[in-house]
Image: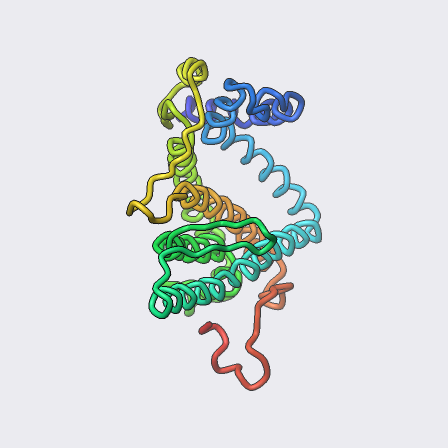
Length: 297
């Protein structure tokens, strides 16, 4: 137990050092022309060092927010606004997905075309109809991965309610804080650790692993080269499946930020009482006369 606490304290202290070192030595991890810098970026992107650096930032912001509640409300509004902005923008991809599906069916069934050319600014891009058909999976994945926190802010997520509705305001906020700390954040961090290396295993060779030590990975830097995944499910099908791996990483980052925002909101609403419930919450509405359908969209 004591050793665990010492380890935790040491890593929290080292987190501030790692932040300062990364900021003052950007060339050692951002200069991707240097294979060793690329390997360092990959290694630290899914490392314990990054975890504690992020934890230090969150701890500092949390302490400041508890001292200055207006600052914490500003962070809540900023993070929720970011989630809403991303979600509202990406939601339009659903319309693009429907339009592209109609075009595919129309051109394939009526004109019997095997290829489609897209050239909005004179730069032609030609792929088979099957390629565009399989690309629809990417649009669907984008909506799911990038609208997840928007859905959470809007209250459209599925929630299993056993005791929540029967307890008071402050008890609900305690449950919310516990959920953010014990479920949202740990699951997000664990998912990030695996998704990060899963992404890079499909971008470079030799393949990297979460269990690789830095020394071993730096040795791989001598022979590292880009090897972006371009394998499709069919010979002429969509071949940019590495984009799905990027969406996994983006998904976990968005949920991590939303977990922090949810904890901050829950703490502030617990502190300020029932009158602060849903304070500054920006939720979409269907308009006058559609109140009965709110929350179902």
